[in-house]
Image (cartoon, rainbow, N blue to C red; front, side):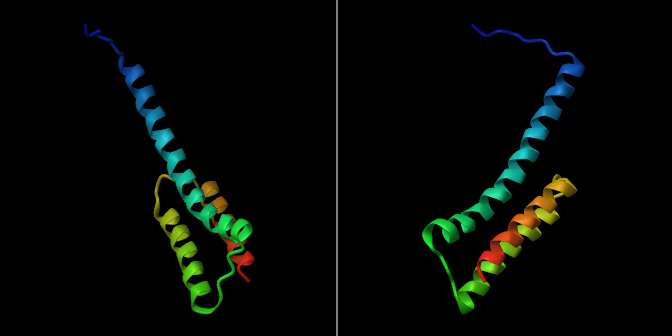
Length: 94
């Protein structure tokens, strides 16, 4: 048997804002997780690319940061965190 749930306009607004906030948090987490994959390879797998491979990896990291900057839902603080994390990873490649 189906149950009917009645929502007020303010309930609906609150739910929509919550869903949007969760999606924004997920996007930030996704960028950080993408970068963390490279850090894990470097720190735990001893990944030390040289030459063209090193430049390719750095290019991939920079691309993640550029995509984050284009994302209109991320805050300036979140973008700064992504940039700092990427800089740290790149410095470990040298």
